[in-house]
Image (cartoon, helix red, strand yellow):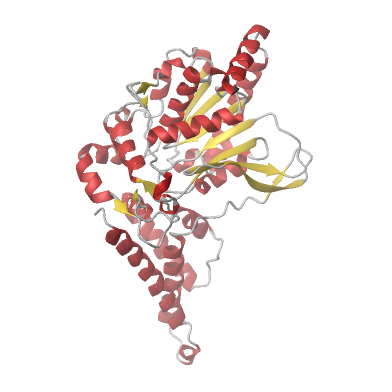
Amino acid sequence: MKHMATYDLMETARNTNEWLGATARAYAAYPWWGMMPHPAFNVMDAWGRVTERAFARMVVKPDWGIHSVVGADGRDHLVSCETVLRRDFGNLVHFSATGRGPLARKVLVVAPMSGHYATLLRPTIASLLPDCDIYVTDWHNARDIPVSAGKFDIEDYTLYVAEFMRRLGPDTHVVAVCQPVPLVLAAAAWLAAESPGAQPRSLILMGGPVDPDAAATEVTDFGRRVTMGQLEQTAIQRVGFKYAGVGRLVYPGLLQLASFISMNLERHGTAFFEQIMRTAKGEAGDNDKHNRFYDEYLAVMDMTAEFYLSTVERIFKNREIARNAFTIAGTHVDISRITDTAVMVVEGAEDDISAPGQCLAALDLLTGLPDEKKAAHLEPGAGHYGIFAGRSWRNNIRPLVLNFIDRNAASAETEPAPRKAKIALAASQTAN
């Protein structure tokens, strides 16, 4: 499958379905049909609208859609998204609120690179903005990155995260959601060895596969069943001439989306059928619950082939993080080197992607970290998305995360002076 033709064929199929939806919508909208009204035309129009929108969203990067935030003064402050650090495969962006003073909590949210854009974390970021100074990793779509930019695998991803942490400084609190959890843990360990003065104050690890074998899911079973050769031949494609990344080997976002949907095919089928019926009755809106969710869920991005394959092989098959055997350029990244950064693990009891226990395994690897700097929370009834969006996040998890951040920020402020001086010296030596 590693040919441009297969990539373009898949894009052609998507484009054709979008066209069919637009055609059905336009056909059903002819005024002529008003002379012989029949509910079938309403259903055809509704099917066309829902289908066109669904397939059109698959190739469009969603907007952040965060325009204002309420400050401590009770006033709305305009929010702008500014790029702090620009790199080939991902940027570090900052959400700046106009007219709002500096906040004590500085938080880096590391977004997953698993087929969706960083905007998938919009609810998480919007809920943290009133209380935190937010920075986010904004990963790029691999199809838009020229081959001349080189490779990007999990080692490069880890170094990107470490660079972002170093840029923000030691007073940063890092929130990692899903896929990046094991690599954020590795980035913190790498900093502990290479640049100790730049270590973040705390890590909040949410629903990530630190040890995939700790609890089996359909995702881990797939990783075990398929060989790397089979995966490379069936999942990897080459970007076509339409995009800037022409010729780059990628794991296409459309293929990842198909696997996401297949895991809950009945649920998604029911959701779209009900949306078509609501649209036919005139009960649906552009920004209703269905459209808000699927506008984000269906917007997918390509991953570089080397990132996808190295994730499957090294994180899931070889369990390098779980065995504390991860290396960068041949150098061992020892997770036990983390001795000062507090770590909190959050899991969802009903998570069917990263089941409970997979993320909790991180605490067992932190043999050099005192128990008082470790914390864990299992959210009852929460699925994978529920731990960072929705009611469980807003009502239960978010307050715990903020309390954990405050507790460890306060403990850092009360450290003995010689220790602070030592950290400042190490940071100075790193900068030089």
